[in-house]
Image (tube, rainbow, N blue to C red; front, side, top):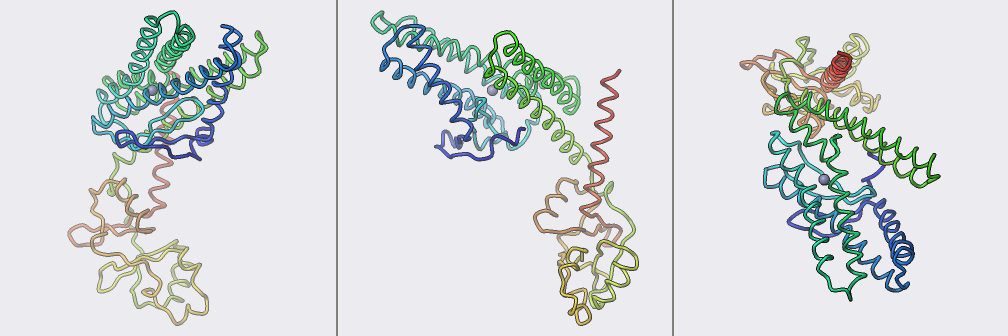
Length: 385
Ligand SMILES: [Zn+2]
């Protein structure tokens, strides 16, 4: 659901080094706001002429989205000041998101980043109210538009302060809990509130449909609710994965049964003895007792069969340099990055110049999935207590 949006975007301009992008879904909400203001609110509620209504509608729509952008920008500016890089802001159907390249490292930082958006919306609300209030009577239509913007910004601030992660209020809650608990527990609790909030919003949509007959209300709130729920669930998984990866090292991941062949071994022998015989999915290649490369089963599959008899392990291996040898203390996240960047499936672990183990990408994958399953079960157990 979260991936449903924020995929196809149009690049706009840069503000303070932050790229502003627009998701295609954004045009739907712009049209909705413009039509409801220009064709309903201004002409029907206030009796303004068509041309005045449309002009006011366009102006109000523009200022509305400027307000949303300013809300996101203030999150981003505070984040960048606190060392959390924000590269872009995407406007989409439910408002805007500032995409964080990393999670805040301290609860205080998270708190400041999260509060900045709603504070900006409150400030804008007060500003629009004040300007509208002091406008001369001749500018009454403009005062109406500013009043509307004041209410919208107040609503924006209040909605975002609902304490369900990943809404701003949920981030504030997480920051507060994070003071007492660790990041994972805090995220889990704040996200759980986020899921409840999501269901409440869907329930509100159902209420709108049943008692007010509003199909649009049902669709709208159901969409927002499901979006929140999926975003909350996804953030928990991400935090769990990152924290798991951050805590483990090569020592936990490596296995000691090292399978290696000499670089000069004919490939046919490699396939018959190790792949078909011992059912290995890959192996290390050594020369003068030093690892110089690795062979994976995928590599062998793509190798022409007729060349098997005339080639050696060296001809097909992915070369591994000395600088890629792992130490037991290397963090798992780094290893995974290195493997992805260089295309390694396995890497040797050296202790005091002795080959002592091997880490494979599959090992990491299995370790992570088991670990997250355990964490998820622990979560559920905590929930029952
Ligand atoms: Zn916000």
